[in-house]
Image (cartoon, rainbow, N blue to C red; front, side, top):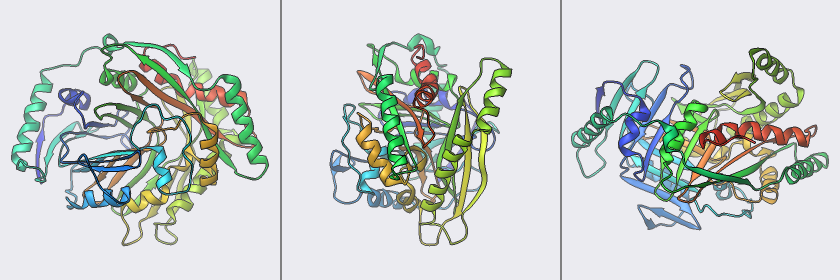
Length: 457
């Protein structure tokens, strides 16, 4: 592995030369806080690609047989290496996403919603060259392995030239590039409230304790719509620690997620489930009032505790006995448009297991399914009119060294040539009020509407 430190450059500007190129990815800590939000990565020119969907598994554009998770493990095995100290944690490996419907590869769950976006269930590129950024210390590095047809030094030189070009090409103002039309939603207010009421009936009947129900918004895109500019606008209005922009040819994904799904480093697993939401207040006084209301809400705390327990159970499948801990429960965290309750679950990985085993144990994240997970997923499938696609899946990286960091893909937009879709929802429990749940979903969608220059409902 060849490493070269370079002068720091804003990761979004560094990504500029690759915007629009298939399989170019920006994993972006748009909100720096020294803890979760610190490192960013520009990943380009993968040496291999893996796609699952429509009953097919495609490796480098050719069909292959087998389990997508097994193929993902085999992909990573091509470049195993040790972690170099003093660098950001992702030093090469697989970057991409797992869509929510990857859950059907793990559990018997029907997929019965409309699939009009036709995005793969999973898409990962294998990256042996990248640019890594430490936003807190304002340092950057070019990292190149030698898995491709060009030697590591040559590939690093190509990265260096592209970064030099990016320094000379400041990004245009995002507002000039937004060209979005009217929007529509797949639930009326009345239909969404009926769906919430139906979930409450399931809870009272003893089927489940909680289920997450989302509505989907669709925005028509005008000619020449700039998908990368849409992402830049999203990060401006809703900076989040687990953001990402991914160009995948026929479609792109822009995510500004506040939620870490799974982190694996040095044998330690961390999950940070979010449950419990209030909007930001228009004045400091109102903002503080909403914070207190959320902290004191028994309903929201109950939602969070249920999902925390679910994650503890999921991670027990791959963690050493007695190692699972909850160092933080229902801590309030504030973001650009909402306040959330966030918990932290940790554990020590069992010897002989790796990051893909952790994915099998915990995917999809319990915070966006409900509990018990399988029954909640069945109810989601029968209730939501469209499949979720990348929404509520996971975006991030799995390193050659066995490290991993993935978000929960909420506050996430999927764009093709004609339209963009995004979802917003919430966890339903026994004492949920349908009208309040509808309002909460709109609070969560606010920043996504703003990314298109549209007025939130």
